[in-house]
Image 1 (cartoon, rainbow, N blue to C red):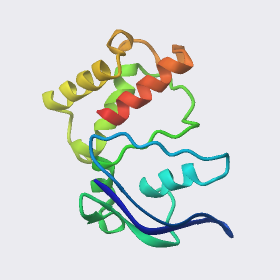
Image 2: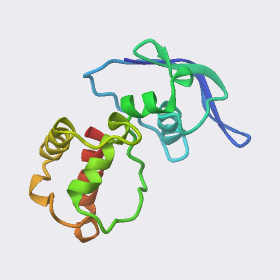
Image 3: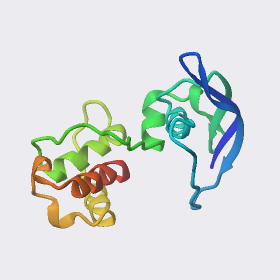
Image 4: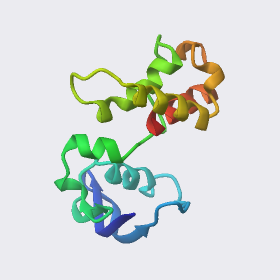
Length: 153
């Protein structure tokens, strides 16, 4: 569960999220709708700890996000930006495996559990058939699915 308590976010001098309190429940779909420039992306970036709120706090399962170590946040939050990184000259499987970095540790090698998590993520994103293709050879939609699988892994 994600809880926002009186959250405000500024971009420069502009207030884009104003005193928002909201609870997002696990397993439920929540839609954020608004015109361009209304602060939808800024809100998501604040939840992903990519933008610091001006005031208020964000809790994930009762833990204040700003109190968590970066590694703990990376294990618990995935963020897929609107404009991602350009296509890489690596295989889809290798790119999806990058999603396991927060779970493996700094200098540890991936385990069979990590390999299984990568396979499961690719299956869930319906890209198993693309596993050995290079990311830079994919269509935009296939690339988006591969990036989503990286978050799932």
